[in-house]
Image 1 (cartoon, rainbow, N blue to C red):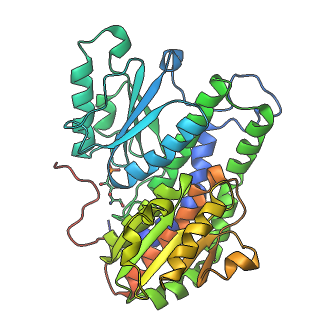
Image 2 (image 1 turned 60 degrees about the horizontal axis):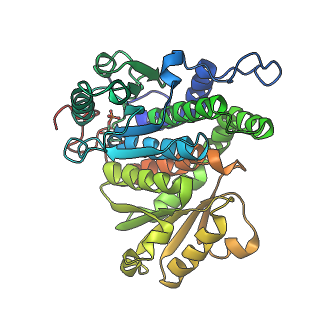
Amino acid sequence: PEFRHPEFRHFMLKEIYEQPDVVRACLEKYLNLDWTQNRTSESPIHLGLPASFYNGLAEIHIVACGTSLHASLVGQYWLEQLAGIPTRVRYASEFPDHPFPLTPNTLTIAVTQSGETADTLKALTFEQQRRSQLTPACRPRLLGLTNQPNSTLQQRVDHILHAPSEQEVGVAATKSFVAQLIVFYTLALDLACRRQMLSSDRLDILLREVERLPEKISQILAATDAIAQLAKELVDTQDFIFLARGINYPIALEGALKLKETSYIHAEGYAAGEFLHGPIAILDEQVTVVAIAMPGQVYDKTLANLQKVKSRGARLIAITTPVNSEAAALFDSLLPIPDVDELLSPILTVIPLQLLAYYITVYRGLDVDRPRGLTKSLSAE
Ligand code: AGP
C-alpha cells in the first residue's frame, strides 16, 4: 500500500484515529446492547462459541508476542479478577522451552494480530502435540484471538475469536491492540456471567462503561494538540521510563514498546512498585518518566511511588484524570483521561501513549509507519 494517507500524514495516525470505530465494531459484534432491558440469555455477550467450550474450564494459558502479549496481560487481569479463572501468560518464543505444567481442563489461547507470527504458531503446535496423547481432561483445547481470521492461525485452533479492526498498515500495532482488548474484555465478562461472578448492578455498570468508550477515546483524540506540543519538548530526550501499577502495568510496557520501536529512543516499562527495587537508581534530570496514575484501588500507592521518583529529579508526566491540586503539584505535565472505571482504563490510557510515540517519532524526522528493520509480522523464529 501507498505509505501516505490523504487525510492523515501517516497510517499510524490514521489508525490511532480509527479506534473509536474499531471499539464500536467490536461491541456490535459481541455485545447484546438490549440485554439489560430484556435478560433472555445467561450472558449479554455472544461470542459464537459452542457450549462445549465452556464445560469445566479450570485454567487458561496464553501465548503471544509483542503488543499482543501486552493485550494478553490485560486479558489475564480481567480473566482472573472478573471471571476468577487462574490465567498464565508467556512469551510464545519462550513457551516450547519453558512450557506451563500440563494442567487438566485448560484452554490455551494464542493471540496474534497477524495470525502469522512464527513463534506463536510454533507454541500452539507444541501445545497441540504434547497434549494430544493425554487423557481426555488434558487434551488440547485451543482458541485463537486474531485481527486476521483468515490467517494460518485459524487452521491450528478449535475456535477463533475475531478482533475486527480492518487492515493495519503501520508496523506499530495500535487499533489492533485496542480491538484485542475489547475481545478479551467480552470473553472475561462472558465467563464471569456464566460463572455468576458478578452482581447484576456491577454488570450493568461494566456494560454501560464499555458502551461509552468510543466517545471517551474521541475526547482524548480531540486533545491531540497538547500531546503534540509535549512531544516537541521531548524530542531530544534519550531515556524514558513508563510506570504503572495493577491493570495499567501492561500499558506501561506497551507505551515503552511503541516509543522504542518507532523512535529508537531507549524506553522501559516497569511496575511502579517494582521500579523502586533497583531500577530507580538510573533516574536523574535527563530521564523522563511517564506514569499512569488513574483513580482506583492503586491510585494512592502509585502516587506514593511517584513521590520517590520525583525526589530523584526526573521529569514526571502523568496520564490521569484531572486531579486534585496536591497530586497535580507532583507532575510536570498532565495528559488528561476522561473518568472511567479502573477496570476499563487501559483501553483509554494507551491512546495518549500511542500519540506520544507517534509525534516524537515524526518530530525526529523518522518513518513512523516503517521503522528500520521491522516488518508487520515476524514469520521467522
Ligand atoms: C507491535 O507494535 C510490534 N510491531 C510487534 O511487537 C508485534 O506486536 C509482534 O511481533 C506480534 O505480532 P502479532 O500480533 O502479529 O503476532
